[in-house]
Image (cartoon, rainbow, N blue to C red; front, side, top):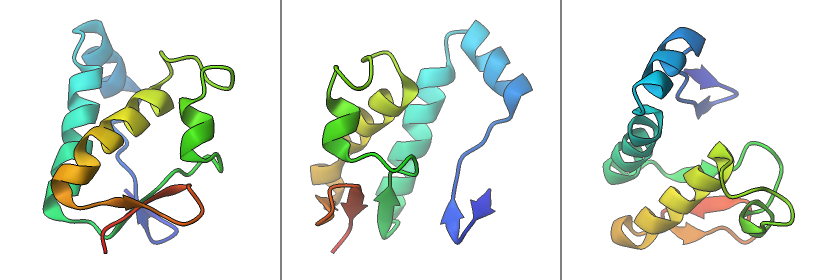
Length: 95
């Protein structure tokens, strides 16, 4: 889905629930992030308004939240695909 000139992956509630019931929601989500970064999208922003450090702070977000998992995956892939944290700390760019 494209919204405000940004891409969002939205599987929809029905499909997401089916993936979750099968224990596959996380792997599908991780794979979408991986494929987008591998393809070289120019930037990745946290749309919630939080910084990367806030998202990864367990006093702000519990580690089982999707946003925390997604940020962790992005950080896992960032170096491999040449991404660096932006100056504001709210996302990553591919210089």
